[in-house]
Amino acid sequence: MRKVLLAVLILVIVCVMGAFSFVWYTFHRMENISVNISDSDESYSINASFNRWKSGRIRHYLREKFHNDIFKKNNVDAYLNMDDHARVHVKTRPGHISIYLDKNNAGFDSYYKLKEVEEEIKKKLTEN
Image (cartoon, rainbow, N blue to C red; front, side):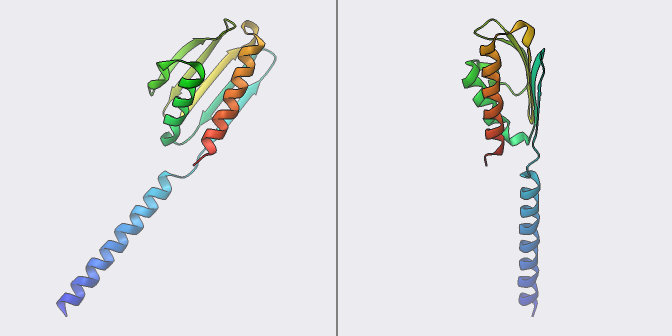
């Protein structure tokens, strides 16, 4: 009888641990994505908040797009010089990115490059 009770107790503990692990994994993988775009005559900005575990793929994409190793860091607050001599302000931290372009000091090339970045960020954030 004791062996049966011990086996049942072990089975209950394993089931509870499995359920807890599943709930923890599901909770931490929930999709909380917010992408805000502001496009006026004077400025263009991208602000995105997302799950921290997607930060690596966003930083990798930005590193390749801008050809800049600064995105190897988790926390970035820098101005990037574009090909048309525009300056883009980029801030990143795990789970967040902010990109700002002053259109008064930028050409169409910078603007369209950031529009491409916007679309790719949206795509990467919705991938599993």
